[in-house]
Length: 499
Image (cartoon, rainbow, N blue to C red):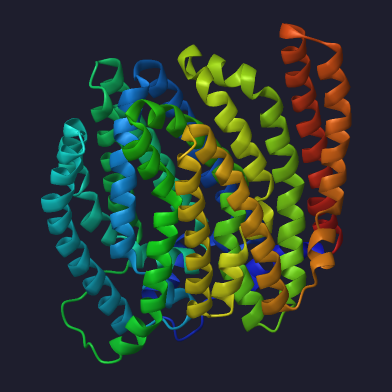
């Protein structure tokens, strides 16, 4: 049956016999990674465990850090991530979607490491000076330390690509959880002892170091000094379009923090960063597991002659079953939960969380477009879509910032609507799915969302104050339970029955 094809694709995704022995060893080290059930389980463990731990750490940090401290850390982190996009270039994706040999692994590893070191040197010279001229002297100090993350990240890209290609989610989950827990404990300890924004900076750096160290410990592959650069032109040709697309994508993701930080100040950026961080954690919990697996699964469906359009519809249907009601529930309880968890000082972030919940409801429409383009091995199309997204995002955010923080946040919703429309058209052209078929895949979840609204609206009108908050929280919990039960019946039971 169609509903079991995502899981069945995971079974079919075996390494070719001609693959290097290191890749085969990675797969065999965790035998459960070859079963569809364990792929899903470890993917969920990594996603939910890591993000719940991150959320708990963030709760502690917001209790001890002022909005200005969070704003400083958010500004520097955004700059580092944008610069890191220059060093990524997407070359490691070549090993997943195009070709994988020992020569190509070494070429990609050493080239990206060299570029990362050069970019780090430029970063250390230029960024602190720019921050000082902009009135962020404290951020300049943090930037000097966080620039070291650039070459450290480069050390892990090839090994990470090999693990993702082998669908070895157990190792990915273990290293992610350990890094988040250890770095989180250190960061919280520093925050409690009054280190301010340094606690967030050290947490970020330590998390990267731990992830890379564990990844090297789990991987059997090691780079070699002896290799040939023959054929690297093909790799670089593939990565050239990917590099532009990745840089544009990262800039698009973090340009809002940069605009708020430099145009509106670190206090507004602190409130905005908290609201956006809550949204990002929610997105990662409900979407990242599906998104990370969708690329290899779509590619596998195409390579094995499977039905890619139906696999896409299954991913769209299954994700919308969770995403739509989840964000609806968060929207209903945000005014109660956000001040309760993060402190009354961050009540000003509630409206930001609610606007981003509306953005989150549109995620299923455009979240899988990247994977569809990658499955088609169409790097130029990937770049075009990234540039379209960047043009919309930067222009509308700059326009919205003229009206203050509210204008910028509401422009994010407009961007999500336009991206959804664009994504519907791209999917129609690439895999021949009509608009009606794509929208029809979300019909059941949309009906559930309407049902939720019809229940919540009379209660909101009829009650006030604490009664409304308590009932909305109870309603959200009951409704999420209903959705999870329906999700279990709809997909898990159906998948078992189809075996």
